[in-house]
Image (cartoon, rainbow, N blue to C red; front, side, top):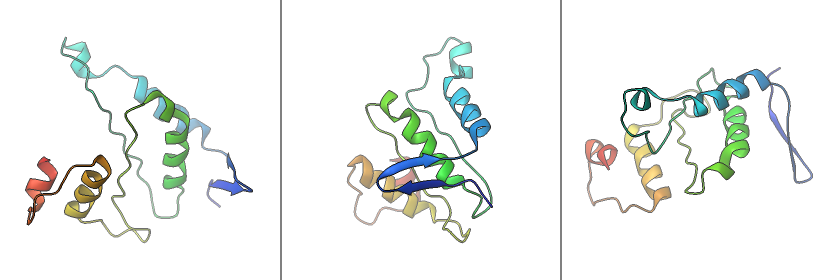
Length: 118
């Protein structure tokens, strides 16, 4: 049985995976190499939660997002990189969905390279 987020009567409860949540939060706080070299810290962080289909990775990511979202007033964005069955999501589709969520208009007929560059 995997640890999952459980919604009951409008409340969120999440059981287990505290070690993983702690490690993800620590990664968010970790100083990046750019900062150590004297360059300005990056404006965005990207975390990848990987695992087998059905392992609870989406529930873990959603719990992390819920616990840190108030620290990111500009928003937290999520991209699904695989379908529930494990098939990869096409890069162009993931890029289109992120652009849509960001309110960026997609150029008509844009190729995958153009979408990912945006």
